[in-house]
Length: 63
Ligand SMILES: [Zn+2]
Image 1 (cartoon, rainbow, N blue to C red):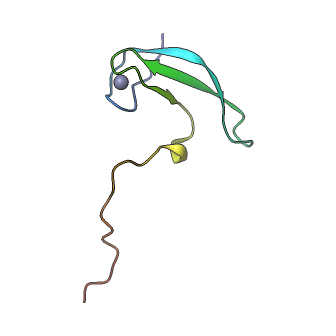
Image 2: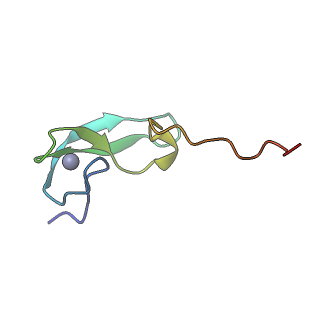
Protein backbone atom coordinates (compact mmCIF):
# COMPACT_ATOMS: atom_id res chain seq x y z
CA UNK A 1 0.00 0.00 0.00
CA UNK A 2 1.33 3.37 -0.90
CA UNK A 3 0.23 6.56 0.66
CA UNK A 4 1.39 8.66 -2.21
CA UNK A 5 -0.51 11.06 -4.34
CA UNK A 6 0.36 12.00 -7.87
CA UNK A 7 2.19 15.28 -8.00
CA UNK A 8 0.41 16.26 -11.16
CA UNK A 9 -3.20 15.21 -10.88
CA UNK A 10 -3.42 14.29 -7.20
CA UNK A 11 -4.58 10.76 -7.91
CA UNK A 12 -3.80 8.04 -5.41
CA UNK A 13 -3.66 5.55 -8.22
CA UNK A 14 0.11 5.42 -8.31
CA UNK A 15 2.49 2.50 -8.43
CA UNK A 16 6.14 2.15 -7.66
CA UNK A 17 8.22 2.61 -10.76
CA UNK A 18 11.69 1.64 -9.75
CA UNK A 19 14.33 3.77 -8.23
CA UNK A 20 15.85 6.98 -9.36
CA UNK A 21 19.20 8.41 -8.57
CA UNK A 22 18.82 11.79 -7.03
CA UNK A 23 21.42 14.20 -5.93
CA UNK A 24 24.47 12.86 -4.17
CA UNK A 25 23.28 13.90 -0.76
CA UNK A 26 19.88 12.26 -1.10
CA UNK A 27 21.06 9.06 -2.71
CA UNK A 28 18.47 6.84 -4.28
CA UNK A 29 14.88 7.95 -4.16
CA UNK A 30 11.70 6.07 -4.88
CA UNK A 31 10.05 6.78 -8.16
CA UNK A 32 6.35 6.44 -8.84
CA UNK A 33 4.14 6.29 -11.85
CA UNK A 34 0.61 7.59 -11.97
CA UNK A 35 -1.86 5.25 -13.60
CA UNK A 36 -4.20 8.09 -14.36
CA UNK A 37 -2.01 10.60 -16.10
CA UNK A 38 0.89 8.23 -16.84
CA UNK A 39 3.50 10.58 -15.56
CA UNK A 40 6.39 9.60 -13.36
CA UNK A 41 7.67 11.48 -10.40
CA UNK A 42 9.99 11.13 -7.49
CA UNK A 43 9.24 11.42 -3.84
CA UNK A 44 11.49 12.92 -1.27
CA UNK A 45 12.98 16.09 -2.54
CA UNK A 46 10.42 18.80 -2.91
CA UNK A 47 13.06 21.25 -3.97
CA UNK A 48 13.38 19.39 -7.20
CA UNK A 49 9.79 19.99 -8.15
CA UNK A 50 9.69 21.58 -11.52
CA UNK A 51 7.91 24.84 -11.32
CA UNK A 52 5.93 25.06 -14.48
CA UNK A 53 3.63 27.56 -12.91
CA UNK A 54 5.05 31.00 -13.13
CA UNK A 55 4.33 32.73 -9.90
CA UNK A 56 4.12 36.46 -10.32
CA UNK A 57 6.84 38.17 -8.42
CA UNK A 58 5.16 40.41 -5.95
CA UNK A 59 8.27 41.23 -4.06
CA UNK A 60 9.00 44.24 -6.20
CA UNK A 61 8.65 47.45 -4.30
CA UNK A 62 5.58 49.37 -5.32
CA UNK A 63 6.54 52.74 -6.50
ZN1 LIG B 1 -1.43 11.71 -12.10
